[in-house]
Image (cartoon, rainbow, N blue to C red):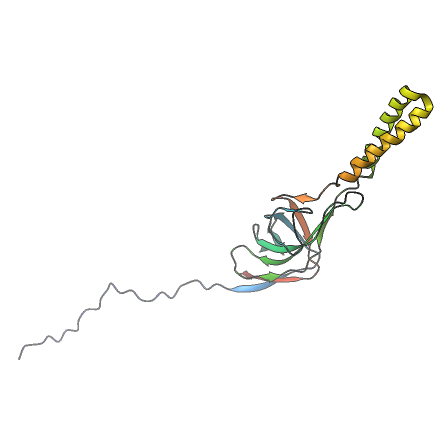
Length: 201
């Protein structure tokens, strides 16, 4: 028989013991109160004449939201929503209007989606009544001057009528100003309901 040694084989020192000091990530819930303002910048260009109702809109947070010194919504967090109104300017009357509602928030560094309750953000084009009056009035005045040169007071009255009609035609053929917001345009929202978000720590 071959002789055997009574010494046990040495342990393999290359095998390390399992780590027991791995950091444990903890989470807690923080509630953002109603009335808090969310400052956003658009990532999607929108317009009263180019967008459609229910068209998706994307934006990102430009100012972090903190509660008691804790950052709950970091900058660059994603916010999504949709167009709720897109009305083109009319040729005779009716100002352009554009409105959006944002309903989902994804904090930067997370994959969780949070449902937002916010006010609707909307813009209406300014009135162009004064501009329309100028379009009608200036051609009318010009027609009156020309008519007066040609035929005195009677000619001035006729010329003014003709000139005014030309101005009205311009107004009827032109639409009013549209509402357009390019990428990067600022949007300010206000939470209408509290929002609870999980944060680390």
